[in-house]
Length: 394
Image (cartoon, rainbow, N blue to C red; front, side, top):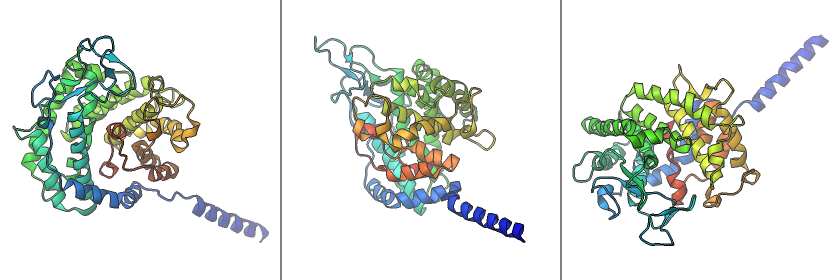
């Protein structure tokens, strides 16, 4: 009888402990429901704004410094400035310091486009109202199909430097802004209001862009970059390959994540040394981890789950999230120097927290994500936050 009483007590205590320590959110569906609840008001407000917007593409503005034409995307290297010694000489670099006089109108138009489609797709996911689909397609048609307003499917003139380069591979990072356009279209693909002929024309644009991205020297240069640029090449290539049903290219990106990005960029403690040595180590570390976790979110399958992949010496994406989570949850613990610009503007609701929480069932990461800013206003932060509408990614 005494033993039976002890056994019953033990079972009761175990049951209580299980009730106390069971995760508040224990399935991917529950995380998605929590995201819907958290962002519902914001999504509908943003979609209300997006419903009022007319398309603005690269043809709306141009720069006399662009070597391209009206339909070519053009941007200038952020950290390049006029040489104080001579106005007419080539620009000089000031790493981490953005030149406010550089031409960024095309980038701003692309970010706006991304925000519009991301907001409309998120609202469609909440409501299944076809009005959001039709409005998103109007913008996509202007960017990718209409001859008068479309952008050419290449980035030959991105991040140019006056007096040095008419474009650079490094500029390819600018089209991470198109990822939520693609993801939004996938979210709305089966809607009653979807124009499938138009969708195929948009897919064709991305097939052409992927061809350029994987064969032009600029694309090869960016692919082989040893820091966040190489990560972002893989991230957007994976996203566009998924949209165009290019399984071969998706597999290439999976292999690249496993054999190049993770082993070459991550230190054993989960940090990214290439980013830590920059003048904005905090922001760049966050940006690179956001990109790597987005790769895992895009490419993981039941058969090949990148969230569970480790290199032979134990590097994995979970270590990356665990390392940086400490300093996102409590920025005062950051062991490096503060970033030279925008130090006060990070962190925001970083996608690595949400994607990591969803993958591993970590409620601390999710709770931190919920508390952070979901609608940043600073342009530099928005630019370096390619996943701004997380609902369409889950």
